[in-house]
Image (cartoon, rainbow over all chains, first blue to last red; front, side, top):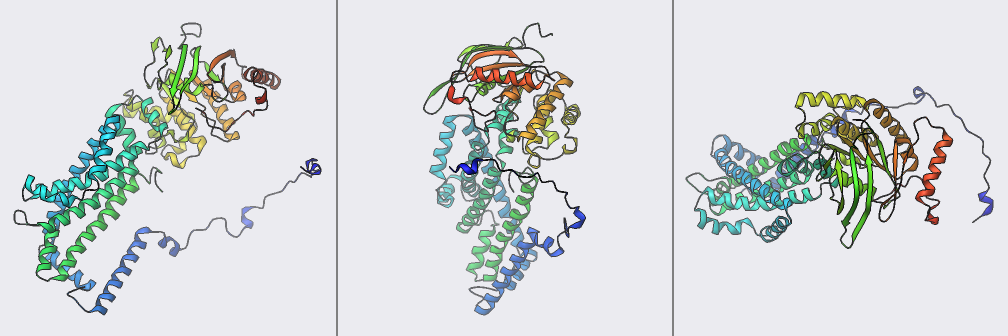
Length: 292
Length: 268
């Protein structure tokens, strides 16, 4: 464009001596104690929990209607009372047992379905079709049918839990498998891996972030389904679960106990999410750099 | 076996085709070449000459529609650990395994060695690529050059019949690439492994290779096969060979005269 600019400009060579690091104020300095404390995620979450509890307590006291909305302290006392004196603990245990059976069986079904899906095109079609058909179907809508098929008891609840876990886990696992990079697939086949060893040693670890998301969603779905199913019919062979505990106490207008039942679900959810899943995450996807 | 005996790898009249969603593409047409033991054999050509596809076929990921690929006299039908691959991409290491475990994994997965001896061998080869301080690091904490070194160590630890390298240094910066080329040559001096190396850089081909196969593009066909220069050849010799290869590759395409040596670019 401009011809003058094309002429090389004569410029002198520049050489400099770097200043020694001791001449700077700070090259590296440890963070202050406050900054380090603020970096601990658990503490930040705990502070939030405390804040929420305080808001609850203040609001409930201002409302002053224990029948509609008991205070946090009343709920807490009902919770501990139920845990150590009452039957809250056994109810929670009953619920957890059914939940784990259903969750485990759901994951097993999802594993079979996704392995079929990645090994053939028809399998993929089948998974996609089944998922789009059954995923939107609320598990609780199947409960009447389950009652006819499996009778009044653990069997029907496990069945509806499997239904609610299966599709979420299968869908996430399958999309995780599909997103494994082609290079990693070729690396796996280069080692001579085929069939199940290939899935177990390459695809599952590589797709683990998605699988973990599926497991978390499945866990939440399982809880929802379980509590809902127990609310509809809780008593099977004498001892019901948490849903039944909530329902029973509502009928007796023991509202702090209702809140204690809900509180138990929340506490178990918090523990599973922040301890179990967090530890699994820290040991796997975070350590491998698959998730920050 | 000597270099005069039966060739290690025989590629005979290999035509390769692959399907995109809209086309059936012929990547190479009736390519012949022989790789002997301890060769540093280079597949060189511009983008679109099917050199990477050819390497994939040797790796067993593709079946030729015509012709045959034989390794030690046996026809290649599927991928296997006797032909370890080093890819261009940095994501070829398993992210869920440390450097040491990555090198050990194929040794164990292929049932070649039990755990203890696999570990010993892995450490030996990691030391060869100067990564001993990083044996317990996970891949995501390493730089690109270090990841490629791990991949090379992993390939070499298997002591495959032939090491397949698909533009392993193309994604590295120029300084690291040079260093890696020197290191690869030093490793070769130590163990004299056989390597089939794909590149589109003429200087890299001359520096790394002992024998160079030139391919023409669309579809890939053999244009020439020649010896490279011995290490320590003078700069003038290198320049002369570079220009000779350049004029052979681009003889019929005038507009490509000014093509730079290193495209950063994508290829099939």
